Image (cartoon, rainbow, N blue to C red; front, side):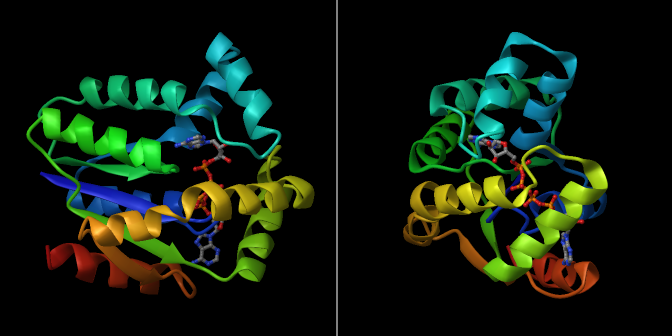
Length: 189
Ligand code: B4P
């Protein structure tokens, strides 16, 4: 089982690189951001709740996102592994993931930390906002998301270092070059 956590600040390329990882390694993909955006589009109660947090650049409550993750994980059958994209984003989520995988006799194989300077993150997300109209990709909300990343999400770097799963990836450069570094790290597992 290849269980990969792809990690990084907003706009670091988690979604972009996840697509390449899925294509090469044939594992399942869970993007909590994609799940929430689909719920918003469908106008469900969960979608309405999600929108109120996402538009403010805030994280959804841990209990809610952990439940979503558990049910998505259970929907995969005969899986070769999973790429977790945008989850975990807090220590509580990382602990829940560890427990969920242990209950299934599994563990995280590697945590890939896409490291990108802040001015580049801002440039990428503003561009995506202009192209896609994503409501949370505007300068004010991006700044809030970066504050949330530093206070609630970046402590996971030390958490995964202590867990022996951490792998730094230079997230600046061509998408192909970054993927080559990722594939090299995965192939060494
Ligand atoms: P996500 O959908 O996870 O969004 P993200 O962090 O903004 O994007 P990502 O890093 O995937 O960037 P991408 O590859 O698209 O989360 C959205 C929101 O959902 C959160 O703010 C939160 O409110 C909520 N949420 C999600 N998960 C949660 C959780 N676990 N707990 C609580 N709340 C949660 O790349 C960005 C752009 O850069 C793209 O346009 C791409 O084309 C471009 N790009 C990528 N790589 C590049 C490169 N190498 N060079 C140049 N451009 C590049």
